[in-house]
Structure formats: C-alpha cells, structure tokens
Image 1 (cartoon, rainbow, N blue to C red):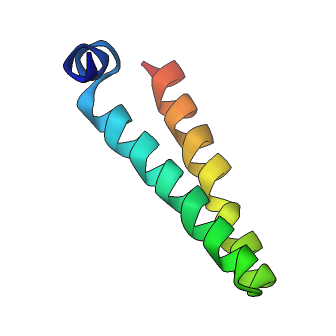
Image 2: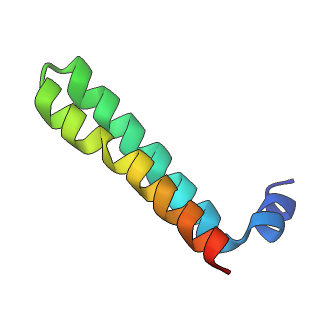
Image 3: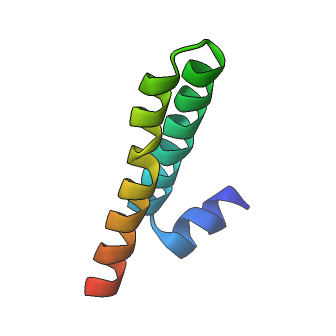
Length: 60
C-alpha cells in the first residue's frame, strides 16, 4: 500500500510531506511547552513548503 502511494506521487513528494508533518509536530510540541513565538515561527514553514511544492508541480 505504501509502495503504491510512493509510486503514485513520487519519492520526493513523500519526503517533503514527511518533512511538513514533522514541522507541524515540532511546532505543536514547542507551543505546548510554552515557547509560543518559536512555535509560530516554525509553523509558518509548513505552508511555505507546501506552496513551493505546489508551484513546482504546476510549473511542469
């Protein structure tokens, strides 16, 4: 099932999605530990990376 998912969307896209998920998790941990400004700063990277992925996809 996971192999089919990788073949369908591509290995680089899967890696980038895992990076985005990890950014969201790190941001949540920071927010819950009281470092709210750091969490917000890191959280802005997730939509930035997704937007960049979308740009590259539509550029082809």
